[in-house]
Image 1 (cartoon, helix red, strand yellow):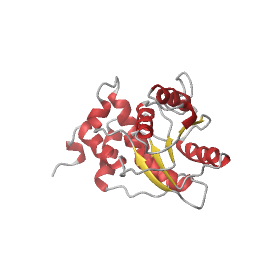
Image 2 (cartoon, rainbow, N blue to C red):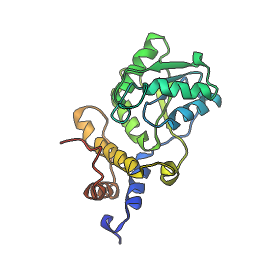
Image 3 (tube, rainbow, N blue to C red):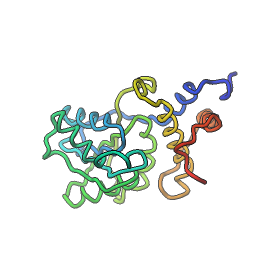
Image 4 (cartoon, helix red, strand yellow):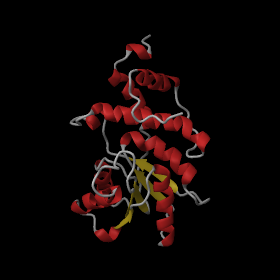
Length: 221
């Protein structure tokens, strides 16, 4: 049987991708929460869900984070611009542009919805495909209300190969995934996320990719 060391970088990364991608069937909800990032395809997916009638409003979250600190404009504002170009009316968009990480995305979105008397019973969280599991683990820990809404998680429908096709630096996506998987491992002890089981095969892929130099987004421990 082949070991992690026998696999290519792509094969190992695909194991991590498939674990991190945690998507559920969608139904109509009260609000779509788009988690900020450098990837504008998240905003496009939010707009697509809105145009399909999944929810009557979208809250875009994000100021600047570790991947967008050098970009012009805040993540949420950039998302809103994309969505409006795709037909979402400005009146259906709430912008939260001060958060700098996933936990703040969740808590600040909660605060803005509560201020507007819009706390949902059902919602969809939209993010990058490989961010879905981490979004799930973060939401369950960080949503402030004891009355937890019914939540679905969604991203663009894409394989890893399709997602990275055309990117100038495919290794960046692998580096980010490795960093996210590390956070799923260590963040529960820091109070940021709920515990998640990581299969041995996935963690072995992580360790092998770290050995091969995919360390740019790892936390210092």
